[in-house]
Image (cartoon, rainbow, N blue to C red; front, side, top):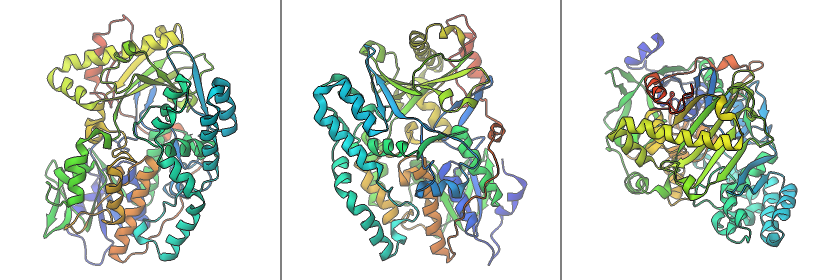
Length: 575
């Protein structure tokens, strides 16, 4: 729905006026693009198809509970570094407290034996040696690598490489030179290979799950880099979680004068003479602009909004070949939320990955591994539940196609399957915390199909392209060589994780990058500025939370097998 202020976007821009930029997609990348463009003297309009901005970075409400969908930890929550600067410019953490954890994750096997991955390398080394003295050599090597990352200055992310001057490039090279050996060794050693050097069977299976679930194909570097940042209190959990992050950036954007339209689904990008001149919405509304930025799904952009008209050998390799190889993409996930009456009385940490026996792993429909992550959300932020109550989330990596086929062929069986998954998970939780089953008030489950429907992300992928995959080099060239543009099409740029890969900070950084490229093209100075802040953040800043798909909720509720009021249903992310 378009606000009244955007009616002028249906008419050509006034010559000599502020450049107008329309942004397709209101996730973190789209919001960041809008913020930096507004700071740099442009007028922007963000078009978001959902009822609220955020894309994958979102949350929704059920019976007073808030079910957070995205953030597990956020890089850049500290006081220094480029990532922290980006968040300060976007106002993302204004007035918020940050939860920090002494350990990244715990992994427990079927026998109840567990390993805790402490972020402090000294503590981690002692703990691992207590578990398996026979593995002293690989343990000390792992912890030596982790100590090396504690003092590693993060790679600069404030300016795209093509715009760096020769002195800036030299400075980057000199800053990273002392760390080249560490980077090389940890980037060329697969975590799966390192794990096989351990004798202890738990450690061999646990190491690839340090970052909650095994992404398969990752080297050692990202594991230890994340742990080091967490130890340095630069990778915590922000108050308000995913939607709190989005709402803060949205507030920064609108304060800068940007306009946001939700429920505005773009049908195609308008092109005249090989130049993007605007977009057309599903309802036929035409919006004209000097520059169009796509901050949505890459395949949707290239083969949908542009009809496959503007490609290159690189784009074809990515979107006609590599896109269909699951090794190049982050998988999708199934997330189930349990709203619980009362506290969860336990000393368990905030996050535990459980290694399941095959017969239990088979209960996770579409599961890629026999593992499940259980997160106690009250440890992250107590505002996720009403006073005195609790939220637990169970997550596992899942295949997209089996869920899609099920929903397409038999909607009733799709709902029944979701209920079976949730029933297994609640029984699992009741074994962990006896009696908790009777206190579960609401259950909500989001499948990979849910993610695809509400975000448009290809196959429901949680992060798009997978770093360190064969696609990595090709995607990097989209910035370093193509400057986030498509060949033969002027007035158009792409941003987001399909260009920059990685987590939320990378998404935000691509917004910063694309505006710098646009400024260069238009002859405008790039003028980032720090957010002035706005006092203490509070829960009301989350605004209205969606509570969609109540029909699916009622149908699943009516078929509940337990005779309780708990349901295995769809929320705004269930379908």
